[in-house]
Length: 329
Ligand SMILES: [Zn+2]
Image (cartoon, rainbow, N blue to C red; front, top):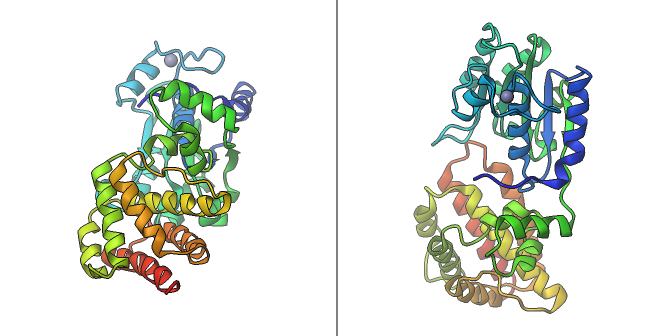
C-alpha cells in the first residue's frame, strides 16, 4: 500500500540527505522508532534513493535503471532480509547469504544496499554472523537495519551502526495524515488514542478481519465464564499470527483502562459483535487486575520472534486473562 508522505520523517530524512551529499554516509544505519509510524516506508525511501543513479536532491528520479529495477523488484544491487513465511526468526543462513552478497561486484555505479528487518527477529547465531559484516564493511555498501525495541538487540550491533531515530507524529500530524490516507475511517480520534498516536496502527487496528477478532473476543469471554478450556481455545488460535492476537488484546485493554480513568464510555470496536463480547469481558475484570494484565500482555510481545512453542505461548497468554478475572471474585 502506498501512503502519502510522512511529515514527521522530515528531520531524519534531512539528516540522511545531508550525510549523503557530504559523502559521509555510514556503512550501517540503524533506523529505530515505534511500531506504526512508517519506519518501513522511510527505509524503503532511503533504499531507493541510494540505488538511484541520478537522484535529484537525493530523491529517487524514478527514471534510471536503478529506480526501474528497484520498482520491478529486480535491482541486482539490492537485497532484502526479513522473516520468511512460516518462520519466526531470521536465520544464520540468511545472514550468510548477505555476507556472500557483499563480496560480489556491483552491477551499477550507485550503492549496494541491504535492508534487514526487524533486527529483533535475528536469532543469536544470525546476530553474531551479522557482526562480522558490520566489522568489515564492503565498499559503497550500506546495510539498513530496522528496529522497534532498541533494548532487545545486542549492544555490539548497536555500537557498529549509526542510529537514526524516527519520532512519533504529533496528534495533529497523525490526524491530518489519516484524513488523507483513510478519509472514510470513522471514530478516527478514538482510534488514534487507542493506538497511542501511531497512525499506521490505526489502519490495521481491530477490524482487519472483523469476524476473526469477534471469535477471539468470544473465546476469551468463554474462558472467563469457564465454558471453554484454555487448551481448547489455544488450539483454535495456534495458526494465527501472534502479533495480531497481541495487538488486539493490547488495544482492548488500553480502552478498558482509559474508560476507567476518564469515565467516558467509547465503543472500542466499530463491529457490534466484538463490542458485545468486550463489554462482557470488561464486567469480569476490574481496574487493578486489568492494569496488571495489560502489562503482562505487553510482556508477551517479547516472545513473538522466539521459537517458543505456539501452543504454550497461547496457553500462557490465556492463563493471564483467567487469572485476572479470578482476582476479582
Ligand atoms: Zn533513479
